[in-house]
Image 1 (cartoon, rainbow, N blue to C red):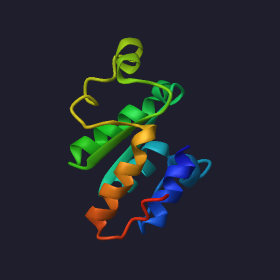
Image 2: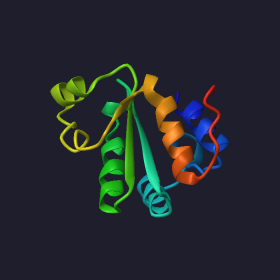
Image 3: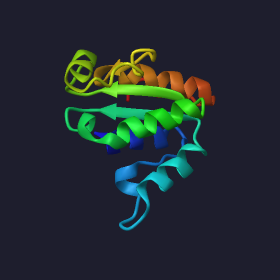
Amino acid sequence: MASQIEARLRSLGNETFIDINDIAKGDDIEQRIFEELSQCDELVALFTPWAVDRKWECVKIGAARALGLRIVTVLYAIDMNAIDGDKGGATFLRAKNYLDINELKSYFSELAARCGVKSDEST
């Protein structure tokens, strides 16, 4: 799912960094994430039932907040109540206008408008 989102972001002319693809074996994960975030305009955080158990998701969002980045939280097969009830991690996410995976089309349209790119609404 993350790779599909990344492909769409790239099709809109955006540079991307996706930890599962762009962090090499042996790299310092924390250092790479912080280096990349300092060069970003926004963070798209994909939350799945599997991702909520990864502590790096909270680290990335905390760092993005500290840098003042736009944070777009995408929920896939999980809802905010489950994140909060099971993990206690929704506190800093609720302040953001998060979206369900089925609402990605509207995000891509908004992003295209912010970037001054014509978006293909059929995609």
